[in-house]
Length: 173
Length: 190
Image (cartoon, rainbow over all chains, first blue to last red; front, side):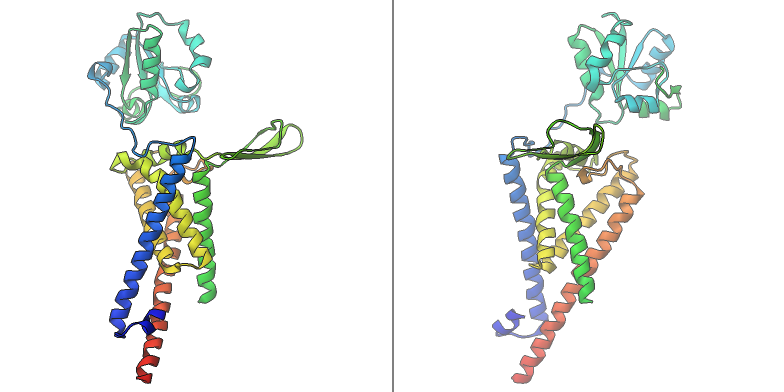
């Protein structure tokens, strides 16, 4: 409105263009100022997060079992499948025979599992989702404890149950 | 129309401010056993609990920590994945600024457009997650609500998008009319 008086050129189209330009400028300022505030707040926060998401390296081939391998191992009946997800997820459905060992409550659950394992046991750890790192963490933790034959079934739960393989739900394996 | 504009501005602005604060402060609302000390506060964190009879309490905490929200954003798996944290860091503050300006009535049109654009982005992200069948937390209001992404979130976003777009368009048009009138007046004067 003010600009219409200020300007020499009062052709409505031009004024409308200018107004659109101004709206766009203001919108850009809102976005940039918001982003700057966010970056500043993150920079001073004691709980800051990295500006770029650290991308996980894909698991090494030797750490991974394929679905076919997992099936063979499962059929052999001598392999321990460990579910690294939270208890509630385990109870909602898990690979039949798998034991629950939520990595986030490792110390609470490990003693019961430990009794069944030896450091020579073959172990397949799994969780759910291509990016799920619970099973990676479980594998690392178990290796630290001396278990030598721990591997991962990537995206384990989804891969297993979409392949129509045997599953179980509830607190029992 | 003016009253509708005002109501829409308040609703959208309020929703955006609330969701921004929830994200920035990683606001948590929980029921549980009452802890000793009803309120704690420090420069960065703040928590408050209201006792509910015997040893029960509602606890509200505000602890600026984006770790959870950044995880929620990352779970959408919208490329480029490396920018999930950048989005988590900047988005809530853009929401806060745009929502605040919209309510304050400063740069209303620009704020309404920014909010409209954000709603479109949210819709695309939710649709992306649904299309890929991700069973993830919405993160729409930070981590204070455990709601999963779903048709409800999609519907909610549509309603907010419609309101924001309507507002952006109305404010654009109403100003156009005013300017046209001004121009006519000026032409007559000439």
